[in-house]
Length: 277
Image 1: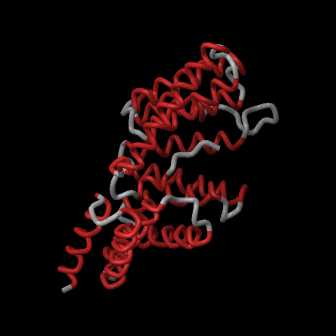
Image 2: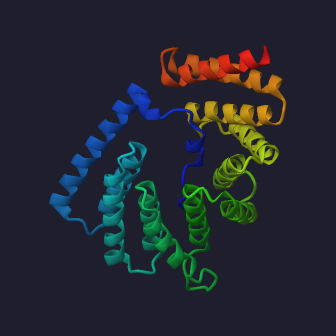
Image 3: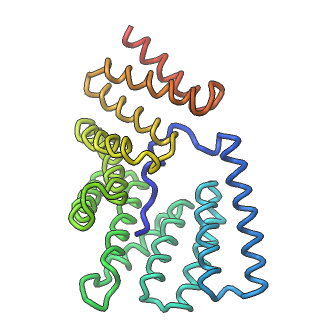
């Protein structure tokens, strides 16, 4: 399945602000570009390994917020997949979903919506049709478009449908189900449905206590802050303050006192302590 990393929506600051992360990411991009050029010169673009390299580049550009290059690689992957596999192959449809997400990242929501409309018209129930998981991916794409357009009511309906489908197919504790639950929680918080968002966030936190490698440390800190914010909006400022203090300590230890994340947590903590005092 191809699903956006909804944990990234919990982040308080961009991971690109971390000099070490920034340097590693751009070194990765440089290495992948060299490998891509070498493979292209030796074998051409019409092969699975080249598509795989382009997929890694697409993700690296996404992480670097270089949306024009992300979109360019996504277009090349889709076009190559069409030639190698055919229009209706699962691999090609998956690359089309990735292309739509890259359009969305680049601020071109109309192009993304056009692709989503075509995807959702396909028949995913017939035996020779596309994989049903691609239907769920297409639903997630449509939900992402609604989120981008701040149409949270329509997004909510799809997030709930996706979570129900994934829970039925994969169980409540699969990585994909938890990621879908995070998408739902963020949507609920955007709608100011803080009680319902808190219920989802607490389930996610329990999962991450067991699967500690599934989210980055910055995402886990962001999750604590979002839980704290829900507590605060529901009138439980004492528990909110406790979570902010915990998140501040984690940011200080993991990223250093001078990091943007630690400084943001310091600001949140001071404001909350002042209000509580």
